[in-house]
Amino acid sequence: MKRTILTIDDSRTMREMLKVTLASSGFTVVQAEDGQHGIEVLEGMDIEPDVIITDINMPRKDGFQFIEEVRADASRRAIPILVLTTESDAEKKQRARLAGATGWIVKPFDPTKLVDAINRVAA
Amino acid sequence: MDAMAEIRQTFFEECAEQLAELEAGLLAIENGEADSDTVNAVFRAVHSIKGGAGAFCLDDLVHFAHVFETTLDEMRTGRLDSSEKVVKIMLRSADALADLVTAARDGGTADAERNAGLIDELKGLVALAKGEEPPAPSAPGTAGAAAADGPVYDDGMGDFDFTPVAVDLSDLMGIGGDNRFRIVFKPSPRMYAKANEANRVLRDVYALGEAKVSCNTSEVPLLTAIDPEGAYLTFTIELSTAEPEEKVREVFEFVEFDCDLSIEAIADSQDGEIEADDPDIADILARIRAAPDEEPAPEHAAEPGDKAAAEARQPEPESEPEHAKAAAQPAKAAAPSAPSAAKAEAGGDGKGAGPPRRSVSTSNASTASSISSANW
Image (tube, rainbow over the protein chains, first blue to last red):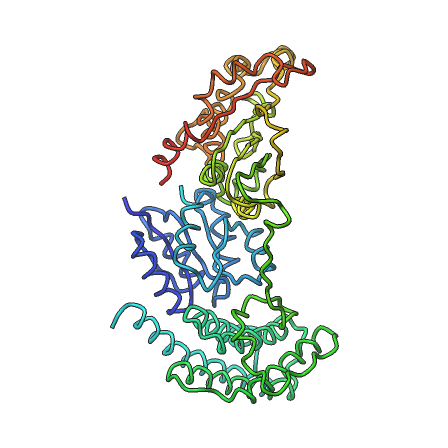
């Protein structure tokens, strides 16, 4: 059975890049445009995603708020969440970690490393 | 048109939208009409352009956007005011960014000297916000040099001129053949609360080479005292690998702040069976006797190795917490090594001191296949 990845990014470019990369690696991809949309998409899914990949800087609800909201729901605490961040952003990594992120993916991402990161955290 | 060409087209379409949003936001800031949402939107516009440009290796664009974004971040956090002078620099920077986008899209060149001057001005604003001396201006003719030297978008927020230097640690560490490490890994409840799992970390350690793992279950409490969101297991791993320590540490990068971790290189002379303190049976029996109303949990006392971990995921299989599951799996993986456990049971290191010790070590040779089929 294909793993399902929920990707959340306000940039169409990044969403498409993630979709192409993940689909070609055999994942089913579900997309959301910001943190608020991510919550709505998550609530509408019959089966929870195997992994969530989220950007941090987004309108309406940013990545930190999204992660906190997901982790506040006990039934969703086991979903691995990876944040998209840049190498230099130690502060954002730390904040994401405190919010409940499982790990991170450094942008611009290498397709192999992206899939590796998913495999590291996916059940 | 192939997929990447389509994404590239999407990127430039999105750049046009973001540049429009950037300009509108900066004009609102100039007119004193901006709120925090506007400043955030302006920041995100530049941040998004930088992110997409990085994916297409548009280094000049990435470099300029990075410096611009860093300056906007100072405004976003309130350290840099939105005075007329500041906003003018940012409006000119927005024009320069638009030129860089056009140059990247059409294959032309941007005004490198102007951009270098603007980068200096933006850096000066960051220095001002931080109360530091403004950096020395770029030497003429060096515009774009940083980008040509390699990726620059991952340098520190306050250190724009940092250039990574490759260091061969093998010279320092004596790495050449098999490297051996003793790793002690004690997950905390925080690690499981973020959906990280000990069994996945161990799986990645196994992938580095040959690993012998011991699971210390001595902190697993009696069944009635178990916190379903607690973490009680400590793993000691003896790893032989061709990889350097850096690679071993990478395995733990997602969890290093949510566990107790030590990674030490070990010499051949330190070879030996991994030892783990198991629960003192007499102590467990005393605790049971002292708590007559509690579940005696005889299996725990009788087999403090894998049974204890198995208890951690009971009694409600339907609501089995992920972390308890993780705790159980490595212990389960250790089960096939019962003969070696028995061998080490009487004294372990031969010193004969302390409580009864028992190793539950195993190698990845016997466990890798089951882990592989379960997780990949």
